[in-house]
View: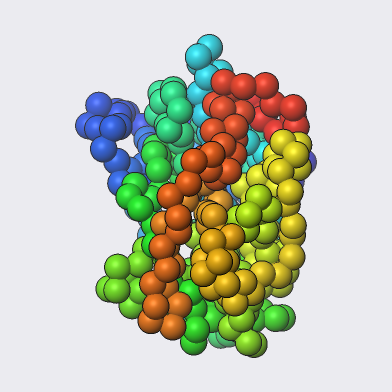
Length: 355
Ligand code: COI
């Protein structure tokens, strides 16, 4: 779809707003949605009918491929409002690029960048009152695509729906985060779909994560499927480990999501002169680090999670608590990142984009 066609978005406004029913200070992550959504259908080999319309349920054929084969992808982004009421996105080009990389892996059509951006920007402008100012506030953006094609034959659909929905958000994790290190279950394997942001990667984690929740852990840190010795990611976020004054995070791979927050923290750490190593990190290094006192911090990084310090981890039925420290690198980087995102500090990287 060309820019001119993408610009012709039909807008159907909701007759009323739900905003006055929302208690913005007490929202569970992802549970409240704004007045409108963006949608566009892929039919006969092209994207058509881009529309912004009231947020509402919609009808689908029970044989649609999404229901049977999980052909779906999504993204997570955030919009922020500054003191001048300007709306800002954080590295939207990275999310659009990753969305289309996921589309290719899941045999789905790519969404043209101008259609994606134009749909998102117009939707944000229409629902701008839902973006609250101030650190800790944001509007979480969930673009997604589903296979809507008719019939239960196991091959790629020929029809798709691309949608963007918006949800006012505060922190994803409100309390402390303790994690369990995977010893048996795996999130992803070489040659698989671990690097794609697709529903199955999340659904596959639900059962082992529920088992971990029952033992008091909020998340699982996944290890490599072949040996379960290398620390990979936590499913809702990438993970960083601080040994002495060096930060370590696993390299992205076919098994690990190329997180936008992860790559931003790596660049910020380099600029701040913090030692950072992107390399495989072994479970054994953590155990050794906790025993000899060199393991200072573990934290998760993701759009929803932002930067989430981890209090402790369990491995082979033994629980290890991280030391209480002053000068947390996690909190330092979180402050710098959120100040950039909220336009409270200079953005030396050019990551923020005004819509
Ligand atoms: C995000 O951080 O945007 C994600 O997609 C993670 C999800 C589990 C909320």
